[in-house]
Image (cartoon, rainbow, N blue to C red; front, top):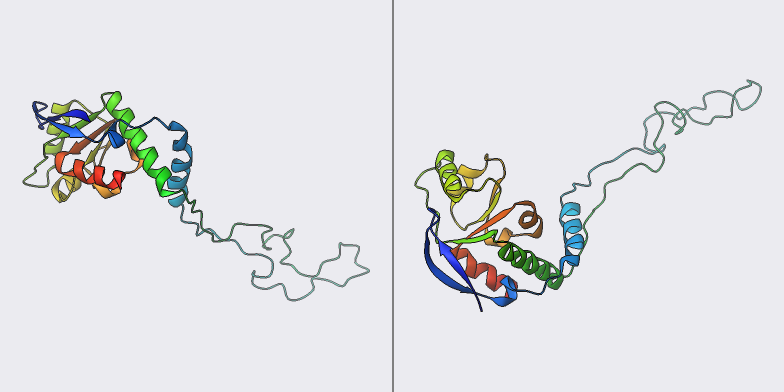
Length: 206
């Protein structure tokens, strides 16, 4: 099994922890990234866009002018798509943009990303992050000590940390259950607290 160093928030090594090779020393399968990122970005789309066809636009029941003798084009309704105020041809309608990717593929992509972060020395295990109060200054002090300005922090049941870090640019706090490929790739550094490490491994090894 691979071994990772465990640090405190002062960036001092305090111990070591054995981690699963399945998760942190996985076979590299970067070709899976594309499908997973497409799935995540598509899932964020609301799909509530809507336009009206000629049958849905209010009005236009009367024929604008007689069929023959006016010298103008034949018209049956003023709500035709070629008229101002008319309906839209093939316009967007509410729809689901969801893309389904097998769970096995999603797990393999996550393991690849975590392995890559470990190999690039951009993954750090922290023993814990404790905040007695909601204060952004305290989180900034920790980040300055760790010397990072782009980081994904994986921590569980620490509401003070979540609220203190939410308005810091380049920083995001997630629970182990919310760990996803897009955020791992988006942020340069990944910090995982030791209690969350076991939860992530159990999730990805299952």
